[in-house]
Amino acid sequence: IITTQAAISLENAQLYNQLTSYSKTLETKVKLRTEELEFAKDAADRANQSKSEFLSNMSHELRTPLNAILGFTQIMMRDSNLSPDQQENLDIISRSGEHLLELINDILDLSKIDAGRITLQSGSFDLYSLLNTLEKMLGIKANHKNLELIFDLSPNLPQYVCADANKLRQILINLLSNAIKFTHHGGITLRASYDTPFDVELDTRSYWDMTHEDLTPPNSSTQNLIKFEVEDTGIGIAPEELEDIFEPFVQTKTTENFVEGTGLGLAITRKFIDLMGGEIKIRSQLNQGTTVTFRLPVTLAQAEETQVAIPAKRFIKIDSDQNYRILIAEDRIESRHLLVKLLKPLGFEVQEAADGQSAIELWERWSPHLILMDMRMPIMNGYDATQYIKRHLKGQATIIIALTASAFSDDRSVILSAGCDDFLGKPFREAVLLEKISQHLGIRYIYEETTSMLSEPPSGTSALLSPADLGKMPSDWIQALYQAANQADSDTLLQLLQEIPLDDRNLANALQRMVENFSYDQIITVTQVEG
Image 1: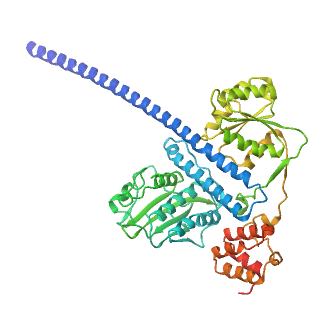
Image 2 (image 1 turned 90 degrees about the horizontal axis):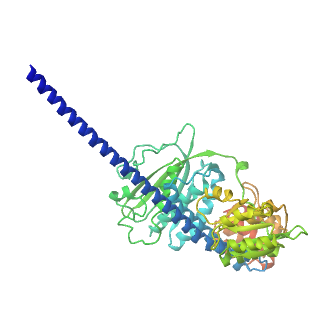
Protein backbone atom coordinates (compact mmCIF):
# COMPACT_ATOMS: atom_id res chain seq x y z
CA ILE A 1 0.00 0.00 0.00
CA ILE A 2 2.81 2.35 0.96
CA THR A 3 4.56 1.58 -2.30
CA THR A 4 1.36 2.21 -4.25
CA GLN A 5 0.78 5.55 -2.47
CA ALA A 6 4.32 6.59 -3.20
CA ALA A 7 3.90 5.70 -6.84
CA ILE A 8 0.66 7.71 -7.03
CA SER A 9 2.31 10.71 -5.35
CA LEU A 10 5.22 10.49 -7.77
CA GLU A 11 2.85 10.24 -10.70
CA ASN A 12 0.86 13.24 -9.42
CA ALA A 13 4.05 15.23 -8.98
CA GLN A 14 5.14 14.38 -12.49
CA LEU A 15 1.69 15.33 -13.83
CA TYR A 16 1.81 18.58 -11.87
CA ASN A 17 5.24 19.37 -13.27
CA GLN A 18 4.01 18.60 -16.80
CA LEU A 19 0.96 20.82 -16.35
CA THR A 20 3.09 23.60 -14.93
CA SER A 21 5.55 23.31 -17.80
CA TYR A 22 2.68 23.26 -20.34
CA SER A 23 1.09 26.26 -18.66
CA LYS A 24 4.32 28.22 -18.84
CA THR A 25 4.81 27.20 -22.47
CA LEU A 26 1.23 28.21 -23.27
CA GLU A 27 1.68 31.50 -21.46
CA THR A 28 4.85 32.15 -23.43
CA LYS A 29 3.11 31.33 -26.72
CA VAL A 30 0.17 33.60 -25.86
CA LYS A 31 2.57 36.39 -24.98
CA LEU A 32 4.49 35.94 -28.22
CA ARG A 33 1.26 35.80 -30.23
CA THR A 34 0.02 38.96 -28.54
CA GLU A 35 3.27 40.71 -29.36
CA GLU A 36 2.99 39.51 -32.99
CA LEU A 37 -0.57 40.84 -33.23
CA GLU A 38 0.43 44.19 -31.72
CA PHE A 39 3.33 44.43 -34.15
CA ALA A 40 1.01 43.58 -37.07
CA LYS A 41 -1.50 46.19 -35.87
CA ASP A 42 1.22 48.83 -35.63
CA ALA A 43 2.42 47.93 -39.13
CA ALA A 44 -1.14 48.16 -40.47
CA ASP A 45 -1.62 51.54 -38.78
CA ARG A 46 1.62 52.81 -40.30
CA ALA A 47 0.56 51.51 -43.71
CA ASN A 48 -2.82 53.23 -43.42
CA GLN A 49 -1.13 56.44 -42.36
CA SER A 50 1.21 56.23 -45.34
CA LYS A 51 -1.75 55.58 -47.62
CA SER A 52 -3.58 58.62 -46.24
CA GLU A 53 -0.50 60.80 -46.73
CA PHE A 54 -0.08 59.49 -50.28
CA LEU A 55 -3.74 60.19 -51.10
CA SER A 56 -3.49 63.66 -49.64
CA ASN A 57 -0.39 64.42 -51.73
CA MET A 58 -1.93 62.96 -54.89
CA SER A 59 -5.12 64.91 -54.34
CA HIS A 60 -3.20 68.15 -53.94
CA GLU A 61 -1.02 67.57 -57.01
CA LEU A 62 -3.97 66.65 -59.23
CA ARG A 63 -6.56 69.15 -58.07
CA THR A 64 -4.31 72.22 -57.97
CA PRO A 65 -3.56 72.41 -61.74
CA LEU A 66 -7.18 71.44 -62.47
CA ASN A 67 -8.22 74.42 -60.35
CA ALA A 68 -6.32 76.70 -62.73
CA ILE A 69 -7.82 75.03 -65.82
CA LEU A 70 -11.40 75.39 -64.64
CA GLY A 71 -10.82 78.80 -63.08
CA PHE A 72 -9.33 80.48 -66.14
CA THR A 73 -12.09 78.91 -68.23
CA GLN A 74 -14.63 80.71 -66.02
CA ILE A 75 -12.77 83.99 -66.52
CA MET A 76 -12.67 83.61 -70.29
CA MET A 77 -16.39 82.84 -70.40
CA ARG A 78 -17.04 86.34 -68.99
CA ASP A 79 -16.11 87.86 -72.34
CA SER A 80 -19.33 88.96 -74.05
CA ASN A 81 -17.50 89.27 -77.39
CA LEU A 82 -16.94 85.54 -77.74
CA SER A 83 -18.21 83.95 -80.91
CA PRO A 84 -20.58 80.96 -80.60
CA ASP A 85 -17.73 78.64 -81.61
CA GLN A 86 -15.45 80.06 -78.92
CA GLN A 87 -18.21 79.80 -76.34
CA GLU A 88 -18.81 76.19 -77.32
CA ASN A 89 -15.08 75.40 -77.09
CA LEU A 90 -14.94 76.86 -73.59
CA ASP A 91 -18.04 74.90 -72.61
CA ILE A 92 -16.35 71.70 -73.79
CA ILE A 93 -13.20 72.52 -71.79
CA SER A 94 -15.30 73.24 -68.73
CA ARG A 95 -17.38 70.06 -69.01
CA SER A 96 -14.30 67.94 -69.68
CA GLY A 97 -12.52 69.48 -66.71
CA GLU A 98 -15.51 68.83 -64.46
CA HIS A 99 -15.62 65.22 -65.64
CA LEU A 100 -11.89 64.81 -65.04
CA LEU A 101 -12.35 66.17 -61.52
CA GLU A 102 -15.10 63.63 -60.88
CA LEU A 103 -12.87 60.80 -62.12
CA ILE A 104 -10.05 61.95 -59.84
CA ASN A 105 -12.44 62.10 -56.91
CA ASP A 106 -13.77 58.60 -57.54
CA ILE A 107 -10.35 57.02 -58.00
CA LEU A 108 -9.40 58.47 -54.64
CA ASP A 109 -12.71 57.23 -53.25
CA LEU A 110 -11.67 53.59 -53.66
CA SER A 111 -9.00 53.96 -51.00
CA LYS A 112 -11.24 56.19 -48.89
CA ILE A 113 -13.89 53.44 -48.84
CA ASP A 114 -11.34 50.86 -47.71
CA ALA A 115 -10.22 53.21 -44.95
CA GLY A 116 -13.82 53.82 -43.87
CA ARG A 117 -13.55 57.50 -44.69
CA ILE A 118 -16.43 57.92 -47.12
CA THR A 119 -20.13 58.40 -46.41
CA LEU A 120 -23.33 58.71 -48.40
CA GLN A 121 -24.48 62.20 -49.39
CA SER A 122 -28.16 61.65 -50.05
CA GLY A 123 -30.45 64.30 -51.45
CA SER A 124 -33.47 64.73 -53.72
CA PHE A 125 -32.72 64.98 -57.44
CA ASP A 126 -34.29 64.65 -60.88
CA LEU A 127 -33.44 61.15 -62.08
CA TYR A 128 -34.65 61.90 -65.62
CA SER A 129 -32.30 64.89 -65.86
CA LEU A 130 -29.35 62.83 -64.61
CA LEU A 131 -29.99 60.12 -67.21
CA ASN A 132 -30.50 62.64 -70.02
CA THR A 133 -27.15 64.23 -69.20
CA LEU A 134 -25.40 60.85 -69.27
CA GLU A 135 -27.04 59.92 -72.57
CA LYS A 136 -25.79 63.12 -74.14
CA MET A 137 -22.25 62.81 -72.73
CA LEU A 138 -21.72 59.11 -73.47
CA GLY A 139 -23.54 59.28 -76.79
CA ILE A 140 -20.55 61.14 -78.21
CA LYS A 141 -18.22 58.25 -77.28
CA ALA A 142 -20.61 55.71 -78.76
CA ASN A 143 -20.98 57.69 -82.00
CA HIS A 144 -17.21 57.77 -82.45
CA LYS A 145 -17.27 53.95 -82.56
CA ASN A 146 -20.41 53.83 -84.72
CA LEU A 147 -22.30 52.19 -81.88
CA GLU A 148 -25.95 52.70 -80.99
CA LEU A 149 -26.58 53.91 -77.45
CA ILE A 150 -30.17 53.44 -76.26
CA PHE A 151 -31.65 54.70 -72.99
CA ASP A 152 -34.89 52.79 -72.38
CA LEU A 153 -36.76 54.36 -69.45
CA SER A 154 -39.83 52.53 -68.20
CA PRO A 155 -43.05 54.54 -67.76
CA ASN A 156 -43.08 53.49 -64.09
CA LEU A 157 -39.65 55.01 -63.42
CA PRO A 158 -40.07 57.80 -60.84
CA GLN A 159 -38.67 61.17 -61.88
CA TYR A 160 -37.77 62.54 -58.45
CA VAL A 161 -35.94 60.36 -55.93
CA CYS A 162 -33.76 60.76 -52.87
CA ALA A 163 -30.38 58.98 -52.93
CA ASP A 164 -26.69 59.77 -53.48
CA ALA A 165 -26.87 61.22 -57.01
CA ASN A 166 -23.10 61.59 -57.44
CA LYS A 167 -22.41 57.94 -56.65
CA LEU A 168 -25.25 56.74 -58.86
CA ARG A 169 -23.90 58.90 -61.67
CA GLN A 170 -20.42 57.40 -61.33
CA ILE A 171 -21.80 53.85 -61.18
CA LEU A 172 -23.62 54.38 -64.47
CA ILE A 173 -20.63 56.11 -66.08
CA ASN A 174 -18.36 53.22 -65.12
CA LEU A 175 -20.72 50.55 -66.46
CA LEU A 176 -21.63 52.37 -69.67
CA SER A 177 -18.03 53.40 -70.39
CA ASN A 178 -16.93 49.78 -69.99
CA ALA A 179 -19.69 48.62 -72.31
CA ILE A 180 -18.66 51.15 -74.96
CA LYS A 181 -14.97 50.28 -74.58
CA PHE A 182 -15.46 46.54 -75.07
CA THR A 183 -18.10 46.71 -77.80
CA HIS A 184 -17.07 46.98 -81.46
CA HIS A 185 -20.31 46.22 -83.27
CA GLY A 186 -23.94 46.70 -82.39
CA GLY A 187 -24.74 48.83 -79.39
CA ILE A 188 -25.42 49.36 -75.71
CA THR A 189 -28.77 49.65 -73.98
CA LEU A 190 -29.47 51.10 -70.53
CA ARG A 191 -32.83 50.10 -69.08
CA ALA A 192 -34.19 51.76 -65.96
CA SER A 193 -37.40 50.90 -64.14
CA TYR A 194 -39.13 50.79 -60.79
CA ASP A 195 -38.66 47.26 -59.47
CA THR A 196 -38.89 44.71 -56.66
CA PRO A 197 -36.04 43.00 -54.74
CA PHE A 198 -33.74 40.56 -56.53
CA ASP A 199 -34.87 37.03 -57.23
CA VAL A 200 -32.17 34.84 -55.64
CA GLU A 201 -32.50 32.20 -58.38
CA LEU A 202 -29.94 32.86 -61.09
CA ASP A 203 -29.27 30.95 -64.28
CA THR A 204 -26.14 28.84 -64.59
CA ARG A 205 -24.31 31.44 -66.70
CA SER A 206 -24.62 34.13 -64.02
CA TYR A 207 -22.18 34.97 -61.29
CA TRP A 208 -23.52 36.32 -58.03
CA ASP A 209 -20.87 37.80 -55.81
CA MET A 210 -21.73 36.29 -52.43
CA THR A 211 -18.33 36.80 -50.88
CA HIS A 212 -19.60 39.89 -49.04
CA GLU A 213 -21.75 38.25 -46.38
CA ASP A 214 -22.20 41.59 -44.61
CA LEU A 215 -24.31 42.87 -47.53
CA THR A 216 -27.87 43.35 -46.31
CA PRO A 217 -30.50 43.29 -49.09
CA PRO A 218 -32.92 46.21 -49.08
CA ASN A 219 -36.15 45.77 -47.15
CA SER A 220 -38.82 45.75 -49.82
CA SER A 221 -41.51 46.71 -47.32
CA THR A 222 -39.89 50.04 -46.54
CA GLN A 223 -37.70 50.77 -49.57
CA ASN A 224 -38.43 51.57 -53.18
CA LEU A 225 -36.07 49.87 -55.61
CA ILE A 226 -34.82 51.19 -58.93
CA LYS A 227 -33.50 48.59 -61.37
CA PHE A 228 -30.78 49.45 -63.87
CA GLU A 229 -29.60 47.10 -66.59
CA VAL A 230 -26.67 47.75 -68.94
CA GLU A 231 -26.62 45.33 -71.86
CA ASP A 232 -24.02 45.34 -74.64
CA THR A 233 -23.14 43.26 -77.71
CA GLY A 234 -19.44 43.30 -76.91
CA ILE A 235 -16.67 40.76 -76.52
CA GLY A 236 -18.07 39.22 -73.35
CA ILE A 237 -16.35 37.54 -70.39
CA ALA A 238 -15.45 33.87 -69.89
CA PRO A 239 -17.43 32.15 -67.08
CA GLU A 240 -14.28 31.29 -65.10
CA GLU A 241 -13.24 34.95 -65.06
CA LEU A 242 -16.51 36.39 -63.74
CA GLU A 243 -15.55 35.60 -60.17
CA ASP A 244 -12.72 38.16 -60.12
CA ILE A 245 -14.33 40.83 -62.28
CA PHE A 246 -15.06 43.18 -59.36
CA GLU A 247 -11.54 43.01 -57.90
CA PRO A 248 -9.30 46.13 -58.17
CA PHE A 249 -6.72 46.28 -60.99
CA VAL A 250 -8.03 43.04 -62.52
CA GLN A 251 -8.30 42.59 -66.28
CA THR A 252 -9.62 39.44 -67.87
CA LYS A 253 -7.67 37.59 -70.55
CA THR A 254 -10.24 38.75 -73.06
CA THR A 255 -9.71 42.41 -72.18
CA GLU A 256 -6.00 42.43 -71.35
CA ASN A 257 -5.17 44.10 -74.68
CA PHE A 258 -7.20 47.14 -73.64
CA VAL A 259 -4.64 49.20 -71.76
CA GLU A 260 -6.63 52.39 -71.21
CA GLY A 261 -8.25 53.03 -67.83
CA THR A 262 -7.22 52.43 -64.24
CA GLY A 263 -8.75 49.00 -63.74
CA LEU A 264 -10.72 50.40 -60.82
CA GLY A 265 -14.08 51.11 -62.46
CA LEU A 266 -15.91 47.91 -61.54
CA ALA A 267 -14.28 47.75 -58.11
CA ILE A 268 -15.52 51.27 -57.32
CA THR A 269 -18.91 50.39 -58.79
CA ARG A 270 -19.28 47.33 -56.56
CA LYS A 271 -18.20 49.20 -53.44
CA PHE A 272 -20.56 52.11 -54.15
CA ILE A 273 -23.49 49.74 -54.67
CA ASP A 274 -22.65 47.93 -51.43
CA LEU A 275 -22.40 51.24 -49.60
CA MET A 276 -25.80 52.33 -50.95
CA GLY A 277 -27.43 49.08 -49.82
CA GLY A 278 -27.91 47.68 -53.31
CA GLU A 279 -27.19 44.43 -55.13
CA ILE A 280 -25.45 43.66 -58.41
CA LYS A 281 -25.11 40.68 -60.74
CA ILE A 282 -23.43 40.12 -64.07
CA ARG A 283 -24.25 37.71 -66.89
CA SER A 284 -21.97 37.25 -69.88
CA GLN A 285 -21.00 34.98 -72.76
CA LEU A 286 -17.89 35.22 -74.87
CA ASN A 287 -18.44 37.05 -78.17
CA GLN A 288 -22.12 37.55 -77.38
CA GLY A 289 -22.08 40.40 -74.90
CA THR A 290 -22.53 41.22 -71.23
CA THR A 291 -25.47 42.30 -69.08
CA VAL A 292 -24.90 43.98 -65.72
CA THR A 293 -27.94 44.43 -63.51
CA PHE A 294 -28.12 46.29 -60.22
CA ARG A 295 -30.86 47.54 -57.95
CA LEU A 296 -30.65 50.40 -55.50
CA PRO A 297 -33.03 51.43 -52.71
CA VAL A 298 -34.33 55.00 -53.01
CA THR A 299 -36.90 57.22 -51.36
CA LEU A 300 -39.48 58.84 -53.61
CA ALA A 301 -39.38 62.65 -53.66
CA GLN A 302 -41.44 65.54 -54.98
CA ALA A 303 -40.41 68.13 -57.56
CA GLU A 304 -40.45 70.93 -54.98
CA GLU A 305 -37.95 69.01 -52.83
CA THR A 306 -35.45 68.80 -55.68
CA GLN A 307 -32.65 71.33 -55.97
CA VAL A 308 -32.90 73.08 -59.34
CA ALA A 309 -29.74 74.35 -60.98
CA ILE A 310 -30.02 78.12 -61.37
CA PRO A 311 -28.16 79.69 -64.30
CA ALA A 312 -24.98 81.36 -63.10
CA LYS A 313 -25.13 85.13 -62.74
CA ARG A 314 -22.35 87.24 -64.18
CA PHE A 315 -20.75 89.38 -61.50
CA ILE A 316 -19.91 92.98 -62.48
CA LYS A 317 -18.66 94.64 -59.28
CA ILE A 318 -19.21 94.92 -55.56
CA ASP A 319 -22.16 97.08 -54.51
CA SER A 320 -20.22 99.29 -52.10
CA ASP A 321 -18.09 102.42 -52.03
CA GLN A 322 -15.80 100.89 -49.40
CA ASN A 323 -12.48 99.40 -50.44
CA TYR A 324 -12.15 95.79 -49.31
CA ARG A 325 -8.64 94.38 -49.04
CA ILE A 326 -8.07 90.69 -49.79
CA LEU A 327 -4.75 88.92 -49.30
CA ILE A 328 -4.05 85.83 -51.41
CA ALA A 329 -1.61 83.44 -49.72
CA GLU A 330 -0.79 80.75 -52.29
CA ASP A 331 2.51 79.25 -53.45
CA ARG A 332 1.34 78.35 -56.98
CA ILE A 333 1.70 81.42 -59.22
CA GLU A 334 -1.06 80.27 -61.59
CA SER A 335 -3.47 79.92 -58.67
CA ARG A 336 -2.60 83.43 -57.43
CA HIS A 337 -3.08 84.92 -60.91
CA LEU A 338 -6.45 83.18 -61.19
CA LEU A 339 -7.70 84.70 -57.94
CA VAL A 340 -6.33 88.14 -58.83
CA LYS A 341 -8.15 88.08 -62.17
CA LEU A 342 -11.35 87.00 -60.48
CA LEU A 343 -11.29 89.60 -57.69
CA LYS A 344 -9.66 92.77 -59.03
CA PRO A 345 -12.22 93.47 -61.79
CA LEU A 346 -14.96 93.39 -59.15
CA GLY A 347 -13.37 96.23 -57.20
CA PHE A 348 -11.39 94.41 -54.50
CA GLU A 349 -7.88 95.53 -53.54
CA VAL A 350 -5.65 92.47 -53.79
CA GLN A 351 -2.15 91.60 -52.55
CA GLU A 352 -0.26 88.33 -53.02
CA ALA A 353 1.99 86.19 -50.83
CA ALA A 354 3.83 83.04 -51.91
CA ASP A 355 4.23 81.47 -48.45
CA GLY A 356 2.92 81.71 -44.90
CA GLN A 357 5.74 83.92 -43.62
CA SER A 358 5.20 86.50 -46.37
CA ALA A 359 1.47 86.37 -45.65
CA ILE A 360 2.08 87.26 -42.01
CA GLU A 361 4.33 90.19 -42.97
CA LEU A 362 1.73 91.55 -45.42
CA TRP A 363 -1.05 91.06 -42.87
CA GLU A 364 0.89 93.05 -40.26
CA ARG A 365 1.50 96.11 -42.45
CA TRP A 366 -1.51 96.02 -44.84
CA SER A 367 -4.34 94.78 -42.53
CA PRO A 368 -6.48 92.91 -45.06
CA HIS A 369 -10.15 92.36 -44.35
CA LEU A 370 -9.95 88.77 -45.60
CA ILE A 371 -7.22 86.23 -46.38
CA LEU A 372 -7.55 83.37 -48.86
CA MET A 373 -5.06 80.98 -47.25
CA ASP A 374 -3.66 77.95 -49.04
CA MET A 375 -2.90 75.32 -46.40
CA ARG A 376 0.14 73.82 -48.17
CA MET A 377 2.95 76.31 -48.69
CA PRO A 378 6.74 76.29 -48.30
CA ILE A 379 8.68 78.06 -45.51
CA MET A 380 5.52 78.32 -43.38
CA ASN A 381 2.30 76.45 -44.15
CA GLY A 382 -1.22 77.82 -43.89
CA TYR A 383 -1.95 76.12 -40.58
CA ASP A 384 0.96 77.80 -38.78
CA ALA A 385 0.32 81.16 -40.42
CA THR A 386 -3.36 81.05 -39.44
CA GLN A 387 -2.57 80.13 -35.83
CA TYR A 388 -0.07 83.00 -35.60
CA ILE A 389 -2.54 85.55 -36.98
CA LYS A 390 -5.45 84.38 -34.84
CA ARG A 391 -3.36 84.67 -31.66
CA HIS A 392 -3.40 88.47 -32.03
CA LEU A 393 -6.30 90.80 -31.32
CA LYS A 394 -6.14 92.26 -34.85
CA GLY A 395 -6.16 88.75 -36.25
CA GLN A 396 -9.46 87.99 -34.56
CA ALA A 397 -11.09 90.56 -36.85
CA THR A 398 -9.43 89.13 -39.99
CA ILE A 399 -11.47 86.59 -41.91
CA ILE A 400 -9.41 83.60 -43.08
CA ILE A 401 -10.86 81.23 -45.69
CA ALA A 402 -8.80 78.09 -46.15
CA LEU A 403 -8.01 76.88 -49.66
CA THR A 404 -7.23 73.19 -49.90
CA ALA A 405 -7.16 70.40 -52.45
CA SER A 406 -7.43 67.69 -49.81
CA ALA A 407 -9.32 64.54 -50.75
CA PHE A 408 -10.72 64.05 -47.26
CA SER A 409 -13.81 65.90 -46.10
CA ASP A 410 -12.94 65.29 -42.45
CA ASP A 411 -9.86 67.51 -42.91
CA ARG A 412 -12.33 70.37 -42.61
CA SER A 413 -12.44 69.99 -38.82
CA VAL A 414 -8.63 70.12 -38.66
CA ILE A 415 -8.58 73.28 -40.77
CA LEU A 416 -11.25 74.98 -38.68
CA SER A 417 -9.52 74.01 -35.44
CA ALA A 418 -6.41 75.84 -36.71
CA GLY A 419 -8.44 79.06 -36.60
CA CYS A 420 -9.78 79.38 -40.16
CA ASP A 421 -13.26 80.90 -40.44
CA ASP A 422 -14.31 78.89 -43.47
CA PHE A 423 -13.20 76.31 -45.98
CA LEU A 424 -13.09 76.23 -49.80
CA GLY A 425 -12.04 73.12 -51.71
CA LYS A 426 -10.09 73.17 -54.96
CA PRO A 427 -11.13 73.35 -57.70
CA PHE A 428 -13.70 75.94 -56.70
CA ARG A 429 -16.44 77.69 -58.63
CA GLU A 430 -16.33 81.44 -58.97
CA ALA A 431 -19.87 81.81 -57.60
CA VAL A 432 -19.07 79.76 -54.49
CA LEU A 433 -15.92 81.79 -53.76
CA LEU A 434 -17.71 85.13 -54.14
CA GLU A 435 -20.66 83.94 -52.07
CA LYS A 436 -18.34 83.03 -49.19
CA ILE A 437 -16.60 86.42 -49.40
CA SER A 438 -20.01 88.12 -49.41
CA GLN A 439 -21.15 86.08 -46.44
CA HIS A 440 -18.16 86.95 -44.25
CA LEU A 441 -17.67 90.59 -45.28
CA GLY A 442 -21.36 91.45 -45.52
CA ILE A 443 -21.17 92.84 -49.05
CA ARG A 444 -23.42 92.54 -52.09
CA TYR A 445 -22.64 92.33 -55.77
CA ILE A 446 -24.08 93.98 -58.85
CA TYR A 447 -24.93 91.41 -61.51
CA GLU A 448 -25.28 91.69 -65.24
CA GLU A 449 -28.94 91.69 -66.26
CA THR A 450 -30.06 88.55 -68.06
CA THR A 451 -33.19 87.93 -70.04
CA SER A 452 -35.71 85.39 -68.85
CA MET A 453 -35.08 83.48 -72.05
CA LEU A 454 -31.76 82.25 -70.66
CA SER A 455 -33.38 80.68 -67.62
CA GLU A 456 -34.25 77.04 -67.97
CA PRO A 457 -37.98 76.45 -67.46
CA PRO A 458 -38.98 74.03 -64.70
CA SER A 459 -39.79 70.49 -65.75
CA GLY A 460 -43.26 70.20 -67.20
CA THR A 461 -43.67 73.87 -68.16
CA SER A 462 -43.94 75.25 -71.67
CA ALA A 463 -41.08 76.90 -73.49
CA LEU A 464 -40.24 80.51 -72.69
CA LEU A 465 -39.94 81.26 -76.42
CA SER A 466 -42.85 82.31 -78.57
CA PRO A 467 -43.29 82.15 -82.37
CA ALA A 468 -42.59 85.88 -82.48
CA ASP A 469 -39.03 85.23 -81.26
CA LEU A 470 -38.34 83.37 -84.53
CA GLY A 471 -39.65 86.25 -86.63
CA LYS A 472 -36.18 87.27 -87.84
CA MET A 473 -35.48 83.84 -89.29
CA PRO A 474 -36.49 82.77 -92.85
CA SER A 475 -39.60 80.60 -93.19
CA ASP A 476 -37.66 77.75 -94.80
CA TRP A 477 -35.28 77.76 -91.82
CA ILE A 478 -38.24 77.54 -89.41
CA GLN A 479 -39.66 74.67 -91.50
CA ALA A 480 -36.31 72.85 -91.34
CA LEU A 481 -36.17 73.44 -87.59
CA TYR A 482 -39.63 71.90 -87.21
CA GLN A 483 -38.73 68.86 -89.34
CA ALA A 484 -35.53 68.20 -87.37
CA ALA A 485 -37.37 68.51 -84.04
CA ASN A 486 -40.15 66.23 -85.25
CA GLN A 487 -37.51 63.60 -86.11
CA ALA A 488 -35.55 64.22 -82.86
CA ASP A 489 -32.49 64.92 -85.05
CA SER A 490 -30.23 66.79 -82.63
CA ASP A 491 -27.29 66.99 -85.08
CA THR A 492 -29.38 68.82 -87.69
CA LEU A 493 -30.90 71.05 -85.01
CA LEU A 494 -27.47 72.13 -83.79
CA GLN A 495 -26.37 72.83 -87.37
CA LEU A 496 -29.44 75.03 -87.90
CA LEU A 497 -28.64 76.97 -84.73
CA GLN A 498 -25.30 77.96 -86.25
CA GLU A 499 -27.25 79.99 -88.86
CA ILE A 500 -28.76 82.30 -86.22
CA PRO A 501 -27.13 85.78 -86.42
CA LEU A 502 -24.54 86.64 -83.76
CA ASP A 503 -26.61 89.56 -82.52
CA ASP A 504 -29.39 87.15 -81.48
CA ARG A 505 -27.45 84.91 -79.11
CA ASN A 506 -30.38 84.75 -76.68
CA LEU A 507 -32.46 82.90 -79.26
CA ALA A 508 -29.59 80.53 -80.08
CA ASN A 509 -28.91 79.83 -76.38
CA ALA A 510 -32.58 79.16 -75.60
CA LEU A 511 -33.00 76.78 -78.54
CA GLN A 512 -29.73 75.03 -77.77
CA ARG A 513 -30.91 74.45 -74.20
CA MET A 514 -34.08 72.84 -75.56
CA VAL A 515 -32.00 70.54 -77.77
CA GLU A 516 -29.69 69.60 -74.89
CA ASN A 517 -32.71 68.79 -72.70
CA PHE A 518 -34.39 66.80 -75.52
CA SER A 519 -37.34 69.23 -75.43
CA TYR A 520 -38.25 68.61 -79.06
CA ASP A 521 -41.95 69.09 -78.31
CA GLN A 522 -41.25 72.65 -77.18
CA ILE A 523 -39.41 73.42 -80.42
CA ILE A 524 -42.33 72.02 -82.43
CA THR A 525 -44.73 74.24 -80.45
CA VAL A 526 -42.64 77.36 -81.04
CA THR A 527 -42.37 76.74 -84.79
CA GLN A 528 -46.18 76.50 -85.05
CA VAL A 529 -45.99 74.21 -88.07
CA GLU A 530 -48.76 71.69 -88.56
CA GLY A 531 -47.46 68.13 -88.70
